[in-house]
Image (cartoon, rainbow, N blue to C red):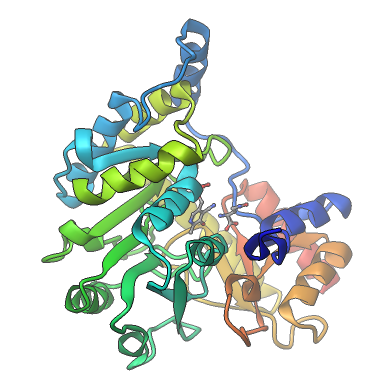
Length: 382
Ligand code: PMP
Ligand code: GLN
């Protein structure tokens, strides 16, 4: 057996969702909306199945979606990608990440990452034979500790992989932070892989900035988006990448032997989604901001200290002094089984030793009635 995978547990999202089902708990753990995305896009997907063809679409993605990805990046970031050579469609951001990491990394390369991090990153980096170098962000504002980023870079640094807006911290990297990352990437001639799946889920005055727009960065940066987040179709698993032809071409080589392609009807529907007018994308942030406030206020009312939420659909709380004195993983099990509300322990987003054990993450992309019912269970049970 391959020790990189045989040694792994089951992903925390699957574990907590199964526990939620077992205890009939309200599932604010695994991140997924409880209402499906736009009906017009679902109709396009259904119609494309009925009408066909339902055969292999082009390996790099259907032209309509690749064009829509390039148009989207031009509209929102002023980035100018040639859809024929500089875009790629994958089966979710998960496959985009795996294809990019396999394509860009060679054994012995070092990868700079920020902790906490999404749980798929490190197993793929290790399988590629590369070595993760962690920069641990400091709660509650998840700032980059002075000197830590510089210390993570070295002569073998090949890639920086980061996620903004960030899961599970809900942090949106600032322009100054992106400049710092970009400066080090340029100085070490490193690639940047930016997981931007929550790009349109930003709140208040915060703005998602694409690091590819900074000087000298377009040629070394690959960005990743996902229809799961932007259109609330997490089950469709449609992801997309954009970047310079020299990198996208090699990532396509990895993609051709991971999945080769992605269902054509879903690609056509996502193309129509990316072509929607600005109002759709703005509405996404607005409706989620109201849900964030609803859940955060409810959590505060039952005694939790909530951490700032600038983007994504997650709110993290400090469990210290609220309910039993357990570590975050045990606390989430207790909360699910006893109170009937599932959350996710933030320590699951750490690959290095000694993660914080006092933070748990709740997902707020749920109907208001579901958020209210969860708060009511917490109010009665805690
Ligand atoms: N990156 C991050 C940060 C995520 O939260 C997710 C969510 N599931 C993914 C990647 C994977 O996205 P997809 O469902 O499109 O594979
Ligand atoms: N990205 C989602 C989360 O963070 C879940 C992804 C999954 O279930 N694999 O909750």
